[in-house]
Image (cartoon, rainbow, N blue to C red; front, side, top):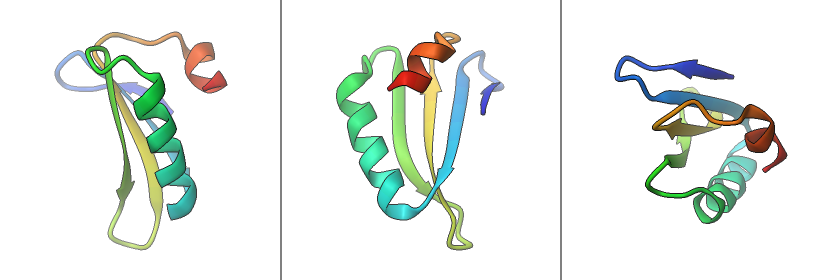
Length: 67
């Protein structure tokens, strides 16, 4: 899911298990330009995990999905 945030950046969230969240976050950290996007594995406190990516500008969604 990709959605606008309150500060004109764009956030994407991918719900996955903890192991996958950590692997995907690590891969994205290597693939994304740190001046354009930030990502990390996040827990919701109820045992569910996901990967969040925040972009400065709306990303090319196809390119993000292909990562």
